[in-house]
Image (cartoon, helix red, strand yellow):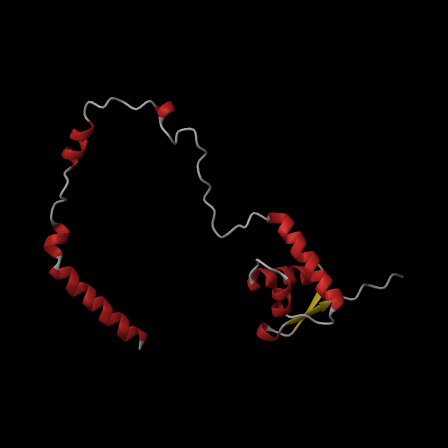
Length: 140
């Protein structure tokens, strides 16, 4: 079904491109020589006077940041540990209702980090996952 729809859309796009081929291949309305002529006689721009010359380049950041960084992670861990101390078992939904400004996926990652660090135990899989506080190791 999806492949049929895609085939129809590609065929429609091909027909459109064929019908518009003359307009697509036509020369641009504004020629490069026209643009160059508009700037003749304006002089060179001093790089120091350029508005963006002294700005730092933007960092290429993928993902989202709320500015909390490590501090936000520590706060989330504290809230999660408090929840684990209060309740026998918690789900990601329980934790999401206790933590604002944070996605369920982030909470899931935090809970898995607690499991990896030995502070919590995961029971169940996928939607049925629940977490409980790991019992402390007996000292001998």
